[in-house]
Image (cartoon, rainbow, N blue to C red; front, side, top):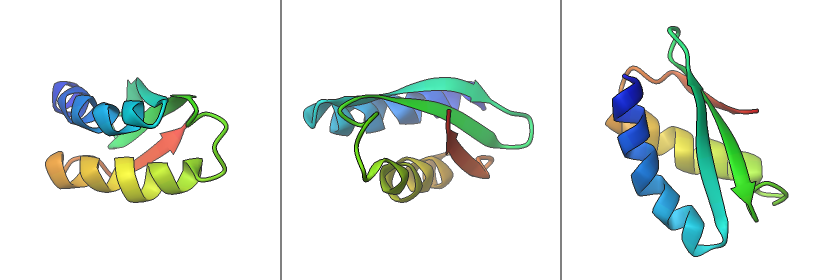
Length: 73
């Protein structure tokens, strides 16, 4: 599952990098929880939680059905 998550994040990363941000995979838990760290402009953005929920989490769940939730660390 971790490899699938990494591949999906690479696609998402391109969109974030276009706006000066980035995302780093921290951990993929056995329970389907994916921990990520937002970087660059995304780290301090007031819309960071929306980016995680509506962007990263939605895309990961669509491409990797085993993902249950995405949390920022």
